[in-house]
Length: 242
Figure (tube, rainbow, N blue to C red):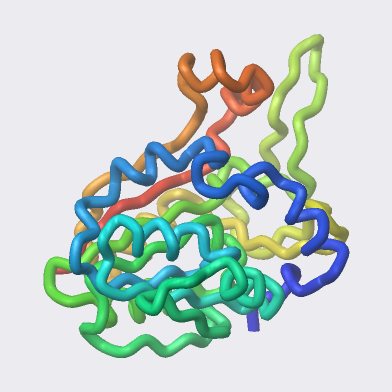
């Protein structure tokens, strides 16, 4: 079972203070790039893997989706999502994505935001996702960039007068224990090639990959994001089944 850190009271309370927790998708710097990967939502059956507070589920319904299913391992997250949702097209269900079973040919779009780096067996999940999509169905996902997950304790350091991002054992895949919002958070480090090949091996054609970093326009509005230029924090993947 994936680590359920989001049900830890301390972690949950700290997570609630993040800008994207308080203000939703528009507070996520990578959201415009994700939207660019999404085609029209009208009439689609959608599943959100790792739905959290349900921000994307509600957006998808407002954008015209016929149905939206949000899955998450965290009871606290799902309780918050349900409390903030008043739309009969949206349902939520508690699932461990490392062992989830998805109905075949049920969805037109599978979406996942900043969840896959928690999973021990991402290849299994991509296989389940491919089977759950109808012909021509799409996968759009974001995850912590492998340059970000490689260090055992991510954090910028000073080196020879410069602020740098230390890169440790990039090619050594496996769990990394980090202290983010709480001690002992387990994330799975994989290389870019491992993610891309896992998507392809599941039967997808990759349509777009984005290594997100703030643009000059982003920095004009959010000068505090400047440190993110040193390494991309997020990897975005768009793909389609035959």
